[in-house]
Length: 223
Ligand SMILES: Nc1ncnc2c1ncn2[C@@H]1O[C@H](COP(=O)(O)OP(=O)(O)OP(=O)(O)O)[C@@H](O)[C@H]1O
Ligand SMILES: [Mg+2]
Image 1: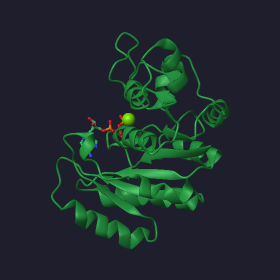
Image 2: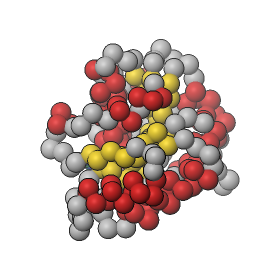
Image 3: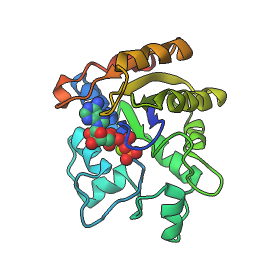
């Protein structure tokens, strides 16, 4: 089984959008896909629909019910805050080993996609960040960044942290932001110069996912 970790330079950039696209494209290519959002914050049990967990369940054609929710997002917290704080507010603690064991569990799948939470340096508890989670898993990373003003520093900081810890970046996806003073191609060109030879892929702002470019070229080397 192959596993990929989808992270980003911040929140609301496009991790779920990319993860659902990858799940759909992998499924169409004949792979059995497991898509996870192990840590979900801002989760309202009364309204589970349209949460990231629900979007991932839909992408792999699973119903939204308690059992499937527990399979996709076992750690769910109400507060829409960073996971360390959201857990603390409920008197809970996120244990990195438990989290990693869950992600690496061998299930009936060819490919496991793990959507992280927030950006690379988001704290999970008093000691660990998402980066520690990625390092503990040791799987290739798909880094999703935007094309808004400020993205270059955010994207290169995130990539730099991953590289400093020796993590493999399978590719960077620039999910086109709504507000951008610069063409997305220019952002791609700049990131290419600094991140070469990591593949960079532009994902335009789409009305529908059917119009998406093939993102699997980024994963090909690792599949
Ligand atoms: N390329 C795109 N085309 C169209 N819509 C997009 C694109 N990228 C992201 N979006 C939309 O932008 C919003 C934020 O994206 P998304 O939920 O994927 O971000 P995220 O990084 O998963 O956020 P979070 O940190 O909350 O998990 C969503 O409504 C999503 O559908
Ligand atoms: Mg998300």
